[in-house]
Length: 217
Image (cartoon, rainbow, N blue to C red; front, side):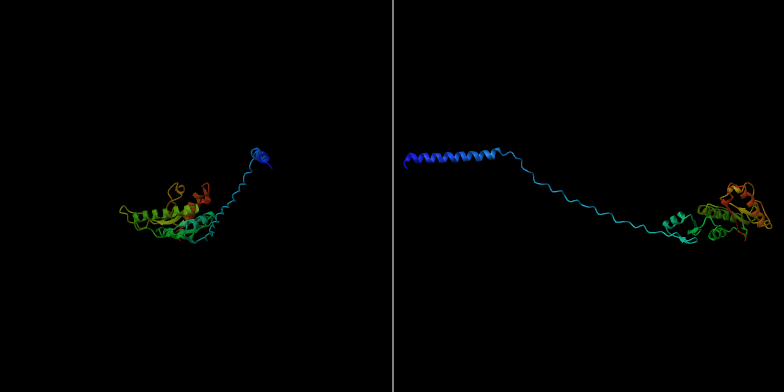
């Protein structure tokens, strides 16, 4: 092989390499297929824990005549159609509005000094009236009833002293002024005073809203 032949062989070889390189480059430059993006992972759902159930304590309806000490007991009693009477000592007692006046109300009324005994002075008589007015108002708030109390009263001198021989029966109705359309009268017996009150109650639009309590017995 002479020098010319070698040169031709090398040239041909370079030409082949050049052509091959061009094809390879062409394939790379003509590849227009878009790249596939990597899959996006969906975040896991976070579950919010449910709030714990709040247990409501069960409130038992208080018994009639029982003393209560909490607002919940009072609410339960009223929701059941019962009443709550506040005694003169400040206690709260469950009462039945549909029944006659509870003994606790009668006891409070007697404790005011009104009843079979006549007050010794006019000042004491006035104080007794104010005290029984409070009882009557609290009883009305607890039961919805207007009470008329049969009591024994007296007549007093200008000095305020009780005048002997002038004691009589009458009635007091602090929450039922409509029953005092005229003087309650001076009666020789409690039965006579009761009859007058009954007559006046019967003339009212709703006689069932009243109750007579004889404190002289």
